[in-house]
Structures are given as C-alpha cells and as structure tokens.
Image 1: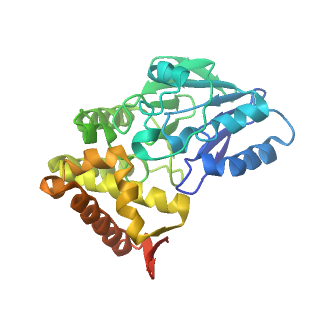
Image 2: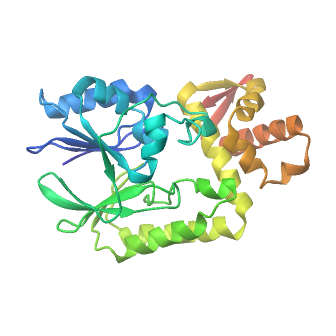
Length: 300
C-alpha cells in the first residue's frame, strides 16, 4: 500500500500495488496529470484495475475521468450518489454549488455501509461517515488497524460541514461519525488531507473541540466554509483581482447559502458579496494563507 500526500487542491491518494491494483480517491481535475504520473510511476507499467472514492467532492474524484480514459479501471462510488452520477447532475453533485470543476466519469459498482471489500489482498469494511458529506464512507481494515478516513477526520479537524449551510443537519452526523471512529481499533489514520497519523485519540479530541466550537454558533461554520472556498479558488487560479472576487462569490451558490447565516444577511445583495469578499481577504491574509500584490490576491 502506497500513500501519496497531495497538496490541498487535491485529496490524498492511497494506491494498492498487490496482485489486484487499486486507487482510493483521485485528486482534483487540474491535478489529474500529476495523479496519472504518480500512479504510472508506482505501478511501473502495470495497469490500474480498480478506483474507489470515499466521497464525490471534486478534490476526491476530479481525476476519475483521466484514470478511466487511461486504464478503463473498474470504479466504485458511494451508493447514494449513483443516480446523480448516472445523470451527471452537477448541481446535485455539488460542483455547480461550490464553483468547482469535475470531468464526467462513469461507475461500475457501489460502496454501501456494511459491505466488506478486498484491497491489497486483505478485507476492509465500508462504513458510513455522514457530516462533511452526507454520503461519504470510511474504509477500515480491522486486521491491520488502518483507517482511510477521507474528510471525516484529519489530524487537526475535518472537512467543512456543508449540509448545515443548506439548513440541513450536519453537526449531529459529524459527531456520530467521530463516535464511530472512536469505537474502531485504528492505529493509523490516512486522512483525505494532510499527513497520516497514529495519535488517533488526540486527533479525535481536537475534532470534538472543533465541532463544539462550530456548532455553538453556526455562523462560524458558514465563515469557515467561505474561507475554504476562497482559498480553493486561489489554489486553482493562484491570483485573483480584488475587484473580481465579489462577482466570483456571487457565482457560487453555496456562498449565498452560507451568507444567510452571517451578519451580512440583511444587507443589499451586492453590498453583502463585497463585504464578505473583503472579510475573506482580510481573514486569509491574517492567517498567512494569502497575500496582496497591488490589486491582486495571491495564494501563499
């Protein structure tokens, strides 16, 4: 089993190089050539036979189409996403809502909680992991104590709790998923972003603390989502003209939903987007996640 820690525009990848080759998650669309290069080099001329996705956010499945075109690999996705992928409903799949890209791909099989699959010649359990994404799954190998967590648990937190931005339940589901992870005898966690880690108890403690902070005031989750989405835009484009950012945010439906939970909700809509853009710029600069260069915001 090989672990590829990727930059934050792409999710991490896990490659199994045994008798049957398989890749878990495929990164973002614009990083697809890099994903292909990593897989080709590691497989040394062998084909990629299987592809699996922990969930279908664009940074986890954006390389699916390129891998399928190259290898015709058998692809498994979370069960609840089947109809959306078959119809290629970009709104329901979140790509239109988040203003992100994903090339159309196909699927051959479904991953459902309670299933047992084989990767690397050993059994893995498929477990439901709602919260960040209501249809996400975990892959857990009880025999080795390895958890492929996607965005359900990172070393220092978890992914944005998107359902809450749409007025749906997400905080409770995130807590239940953390509770589930706590009941597993995991000794190594491979997160969707960041390095793999072994201090599972410490990561869970930090995740619970983060969840308590966000759920105590839902505006915090909305603000976090907007910062993440603007940072994603910066990672993808590298530089954004300051005057263009309010318009870019206006084109991302989930931003409008998040703004409904913020102090700008009562402002005229154009003023609200400008206010949120200015707030996001200041927040990212303060966190040293971006910098100004004249009239442009640059990634950092």
